Length: 470
Image (tube, rainbow, N blue to C red):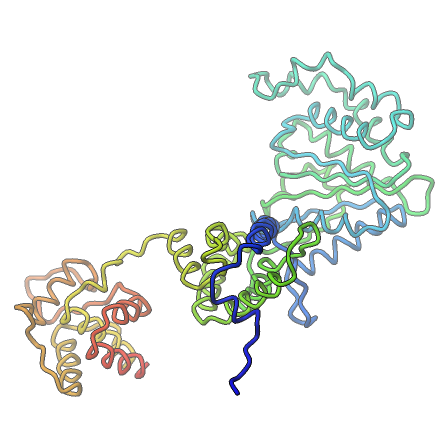
């Protein structure tokens, strides 16, 4: 009696049945949405928590104090682009027990204090009943006389616009925010651009209101969270503004470890399907195919390379967009070959992409160089290289010292002209050409791939000895 195979794994090797094609479409939509918004994976080991997990914990504690205890808090969220700053804030807000008033401003759009105040008033009016708002805020939100002046594309000097917003009036408007029925969180994206506003009046009013907000009082909580990628933003604050800032700085990081790459990839490829009607049979087949895909050594290598190059989760997610879009009923499962092709198209073309087309003597010289490098000789002369090649030929019991008219010496000259072998010193009249030392500008892994792609049996043996002596 033969061994019974798993139905899902057996079906995953063939084409997709007609009644499962709709499920494939739904699965692609769910995966693409997960690739656009990568999930946050929590580490099981507390000692290996990522920087973003620690940042989320700190920011959650801060916002929880604002929402539940009525505290006034301020902080600065620092991190490079694509490190998950916005995602961290949104997740922390979504986990709050009480729904706060959230005001989102951007220094790229609100280029002066007047525009910032008008947008703040508009967002307050849309989230709070107009009857609960002070008359000043309702008037600022509905003031139609500002339409012409507030066009950010006009060449109006910033100073002229700022003079139309009295500082005292601005401060009184912002001071009314903690008196609203719910706690308020103000998110200032591109916080460093707000420091360029004249006198930093808007920042001063916000932070002064935060400082005057005390836990246990009659007012509700008020928090200001600045988001920026500039590490020197704090130094750009004026002295009076800096004195009202709490000094809390929470950092995020874009780098992910190679050990986390598989878990993140699995979470993106197997997202929640609550919003889609997917057949249970297809779901089992898809999960089995993802397991096989992640178990492939080539997939593991590409994920490790992606983490070592950038470590950005968005760059990692971008690798899977093209393979997922190309899934069809005749090829409904992800393969390592598709991922390799996607990685090649999104990365810089190798400088020596033609290595596998080199003749036999040239590849022998490249292998000999890295065998010598493993022996402790990073720079070699031609005579030293030739000795390594001759020993390799003697061991392999073949003697292709001259092949189709291309000798070892001619191959060496060709590699020099192609700048694969680079001289460590300039040409000299006194020094003979045979005594010049050269280094190889090709990476060891590229040489290995070229030899494997060439497929010559003698070169393969030479490769095993060269890499084995490493």
